[in-house]
Amino acid sequence: MIENQEDRVDRRIRRESGELKFEEALKFIHGRLKFGSRPGLLRMEAILERVHHPERALSVIHIAGTNGKGSTVAFLRSLLMESDLKVGTFTSPYIESFTERISINGNPIPENKLISYVKDYKPLVEKMDQDERLKGITEFELITAMTFSYFKDEQVDVAIVEVGLGGLYDSTNVVIPDVVGITTIELDHQDILGETLQEIAAQKAGIIKQGVSVVAGNIQSKTMCVIEEVARKKQAKLFRYDVDYSSFYLPTNDFWGERFDYQTNERKFFGLEISMLGIHQTENAAMAIKLAEVYLSLKDNVLSENNIRIGLKNAFWPARMERISSRPLIVLDGAHNEAAMKRLAENLREEFAGRRIKILFSSLETKDVSSMIWQLQEIPKVHLYLTSFNYPRALDLANVSHLVNENLDLVSVWAFGLGDILSKMKENDVLLVTGSLYFVSQVREFLKRNGKVNENSLKTYFSSLSISSPYHF
Image 1 (spheres, rainbow, N blue to C red):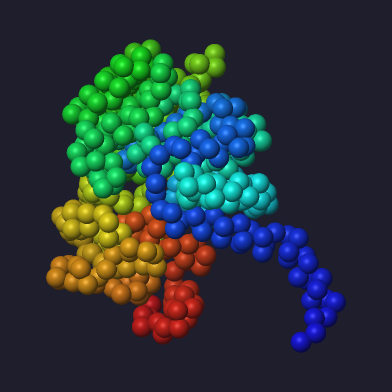
Image 2: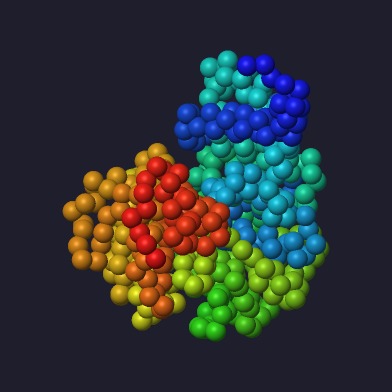
């Protein structure tokens, strides 16, 4: 078939707009996934040396922890933006778009910018692959390095960098930060970080640098002692939750969010409001305030009460007790490990006492699925739907089929479960979608794309799977 002039023009426009090139850029980045997670800093140091160490030009706040990193970063970013700073954030995983992992003032890196950095780094990576010592740079290492280049080129005032896994051997641990934050210490990724809480704490504390202040979240004493010891050896000033700063939860039922008081030895603010739901989010917000206070003091600046109130209220982090619909009430939360699920169960008992709760849940096989399911089943008036989703190592329903009872069903296709739940929901019911963030993000994308959930939107989705919808509203 001969291509006419109009087709050639359309193809050229698409090519020049970056559509095809962006897909190729992502394909190259994701192609590094085959090397898995490989703790260690040798490859990072090598590639950063080849691009003249952009990370050394950055002012960095480095955040580690088992849970709460994302929300703490969101609060901190909003506080610093309210203080008129240009704030870069490097986070994972993404919820809607890959580019949101690398953001400035909440705006994801433009596709054309990502393309340009892939072009810069691709030949360097391919050359390193020829070196036996340096070959096999991972996806996370690659995007970490590109993030540093982007933040340097865009001259951000501060870069908030979230650890990918652990801390000590994480690829982000090449930075020399101005302030360090450690949110929580719980059992997770034991195959890599260690079997005990103390071993995991030592990995997280590995981001503490000589003389650099540390802000610790609500961490239990038996692991806090590990952080205290590392901070002492590094001569790093340590700010501890409930010792050097505190939050006091204020129960409320009149709006979607939470209220709390914040206090240090020098300051106290009453009735601070956040738009995220959950008692633990008030602790994350308090930690973010302390991080911002410590950081701004290094820059001879002060975090004002007005900036605190506005910054906290404006902070948003998707898929963390996120209300995606009011009628019916649909909430999304990426509680992806045992500790996060325990917090979620506590929040559900507090926030939705007396209401029927329907839960659509899926997880990765690598997690303690049995424990998470047990915690969800202990919630009063709950009906649990276990499902799977399109992702490597997603929950195999055959492994949980023995759990089926009058309050627990298996759903082979999550969209079927969504339709079934919605068809049976009454006025005061709540639907919670939870588990792996990869699962929650797929459901969220469907819900956001379709605007609202009804028979037509579900039929459209089922049609895309070549499946007839069995549900009617």
